[in-house]
Image 1 (spheres, rainbow, N blue to C red):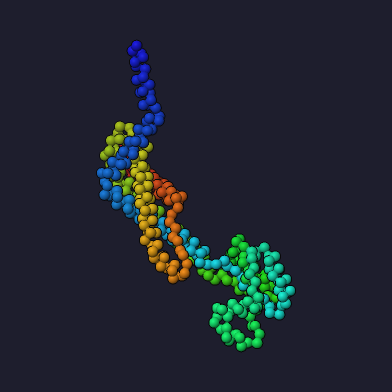
Image 2 (image 1 turned 180 degrees about the vertical axis):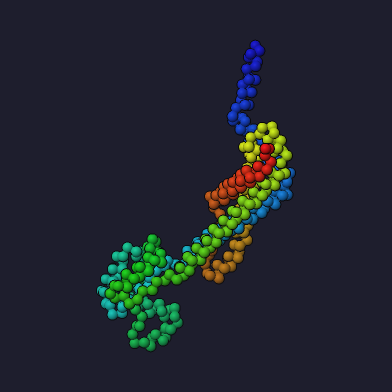
Length: 323
């Protein structure tokens, strides 16, 4: 009878001493220490979080500017093309054969042919010199073939090579490559991308230093507690865990605040961008962070918080270690 009554108690004690139960209690203890330390120093903790959030917001906003500038550049700039000026002495049959030759090149996707009659009509419409052109005895303008390259050929190097090859064909007087704006916009977006990377590197260093300094201050504030824990035989992992969780928690909250600040920035600047788009005669829609981009920022910040806390704790915990 006594054996039956004691059996559940022994099983309960065994369950409480299992690995999962001990791990659960240690995790709970570490998180309680993290939240207690946050609530006891709430002003300093919030100040640290806002400093980190602003540091994360700067590269995030720079990334958003680069992403929207890249999309806007593609929207504003048409496909780079080659404008071919055909010899005026060619007959219609020779011109048709030349167009067939142009279409045979693998880089060519489409050709828009403008006859001499159509080119002069276009010139009259856009130049405003229709009355002056009517005084001429013959049409001075040549026929034009506008070559649209394929997607994989929309590179300056490939287009220049194609321009050189096409100039060797008989019946072509000149070829103009309309890629000046494309080159400038590409250079501009690449410059913005480089600036984003530089700012991101500096901000990662700044976030690491801020979190490391915050953890260092927590260690010095709890120096006596750490000494007592070492005296009663606490392992280094048990002592480290609350500080590591504190770094993860600071990174998580800071990244969420940073995402909110980024959305506020997009909302505030959208009205300014709408005025600019009206001037350029195009619609520009600013795109914020996607879900996967937001999750990536949160994970990166949490990893930075954990790694910075680990380095700071390992370094400054030696000061409180008993020799």
